Image 1 (cartoon, rainbow, N blue to C red):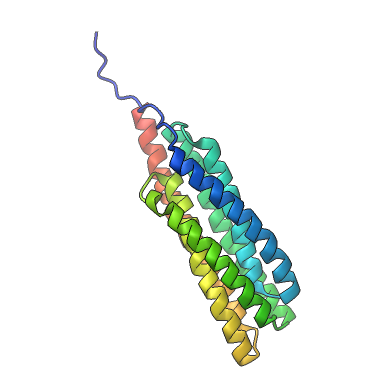
Image 2 (tube, rainbow, N blue to C red):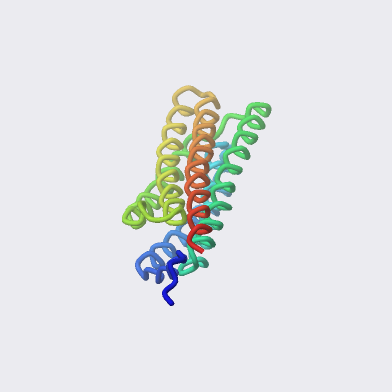
Length: 207
């Protein structure tokens, strides 16, 4: 007898191009994380440290995405949900770093900020171009694209902050950019969580 029940479709076969793109993004983000941690500490820059934390979070994001390729919709959505929450948490961590920087009141080193910002921008533009084709996928793919997009925007902001610090002799441009990066993390996290919850609900109905 034919069954009229709905079932979740078979897991999508992992796309080799997407897998390769994720590996490239993972290597780039881990490398830039180390560069910005060291550079941020040397330059006393909140924006660089915020961007470094973002690079680390994205590297974890890409690594997890590689592990769930080919998994069911429910598990892909569950992992995306965790990543979305992590992205939002990152935003709150950066806000705390901004407050700490204001309390210390140390002016960052503009030249170091600008140089590392340009290097990071080049790396992230390459990553964003590679991942652009996968921006309209499920929540897992979308979270990967949002991470790369936010990184590129954040790098431009870091460069502008360096120019602002150099021109004004104030730490405020650095602090403002760090706050912008925090907002990007919060909004992107919200988008991913919203889509992931919807996909989890759909997957339960299909079982």
